[in-house]
Image (tube, rainbow, N blue to C red; front, side, top):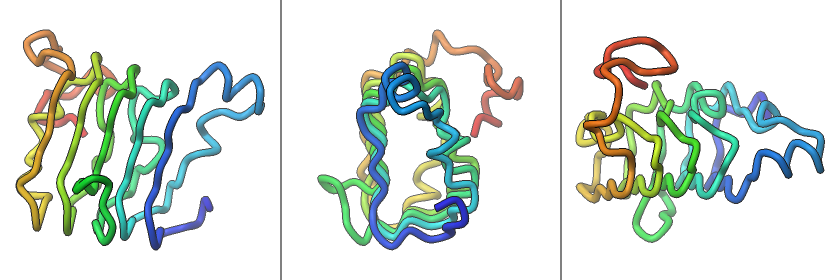
Length: 152
């Protein structure tokens, strides 16, 4: 899968507990990385994962989410990833169909500052709820030390 550039379908990564995953299976999240992936034709669902502070390592080159199939009307669903501090999809530039739901990330900053309306082609359905209060966020991205407008 490391050489995969297109997933014809959906990606779902759910219920990864860092301790269990690394001790029982002797893996690290590096095994989940798809460094060459550019396109997912369906939806991307990342839910209840305790491993990730950012999804940048998983999908550093993901540019297109097609939304040919949707998860409850959404093409990109990020929910309850409790360690998530940044979305980390710097190359994502188009979602062809479906909405975006980003919910339940008590450490996530700057999700609302991304120009989602430029990325989405066929929907104005955004749900951003119970993420970190933006007033409590730093003026710089903690992982990249850039200004908040530069957060991936």
